[in-house]
Length: 203
Image (cartoon, helix red, strand yellow):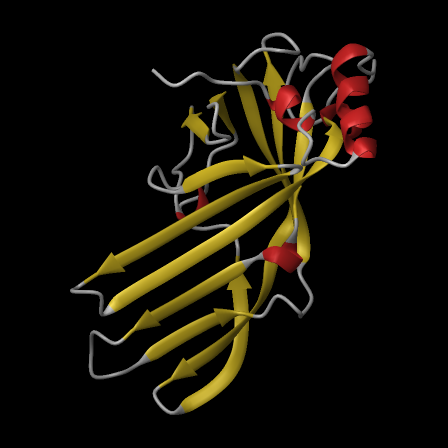
């Protein structure tokens, strides 16, 4: 069985800037006394990671029918909304705990769309339908991989059970690739959430 480590310990690694390490240690040891808006009864040492729209990568192509559809996320254009992942370990140094997925606003951006021979832009929806869940449990493995067990909703896209979620320094990355119909349908997601301090600050 792999040895797991805590989110706080990941924040203490040498790959994380000293200011960030200091903030994480302050969250774990000092905590803050404000009530958290993201989930009920979060401990003082709970931390959150905020979605970074400038790091999103999404590409989709469907050549399975007589038509042709290609979509590419335009991360240089405006993104409306926010979302955060909040982690509440059982103790500051624990490897498992509860997580909450908090959203604010529509979470939409822009896609470049090529349909047949026509290229234009269209709205890109980060949050899928049926909706993602709001909470669950987690474990962080020794290599930085994150396993999420959702208590509600329908995890998909960047939270698909087959997605590769992992901590790298102060960032949580998710990579997911979907293929169907002999690869004539292909989708690729990469999303990132940056360490954002105490969960009690709110998303």
